[in-house]
Length: 239
Image 1 (cartoon, rainbow, N blue to C red):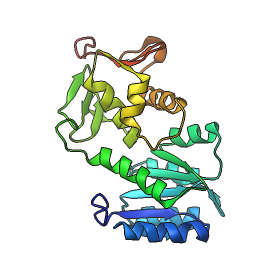
Image 2 (image 1 turned 180 degrees about the vertical axis):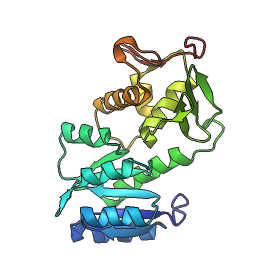
Image 3 (image 1 turned 90 degrees about the vertical axis):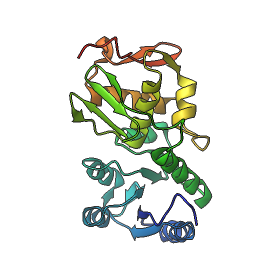
């Protein structure tokens, strides 16, 4: 049994039996408890009835688009979510990430690959090592607390996905300093990620929008062209 699984409940939304059945079996072997549904309606009903620890979501479903399910889930939940799709274009990936997916897996894929991606997401969400979560960082009205995995602005929580929070927390660790794009990709994503650097740009753009940070007159998150990004130092921003 996988130590990270700990009987975690997984919502698996997949209408192809040839994909859903072996994947559900693999999840059970590794200690997860999967609930398998095959439609948008079934997914929304299951998500409304039960709180899940992880969601694996196919985009092409017989009664609609899985992206609608992602939107509904992200209205009030930060549950880790991986999208499955046969559409592997960069635009599809960007749209999925903008909707709040933590990762994007293109069919065909192996159960081992998907489980590796799940473990990578869960490790970051549960990391309690000395080099992991740190106390609150206060920058003007922005607070980033890795221990509680919460970010707030003017005292109001910012609804961030796991990857969005990981990215903000990584920048907050070196607030005031430039963090290279390559280092952000390496630290926030993992060796199983095969996407492009555009993934980082999408997440930066979404972070700015959620923080109300105008990129033309940025208060918190600054782009250093050709190098990377910098979160303002605490003494740079006045509350």
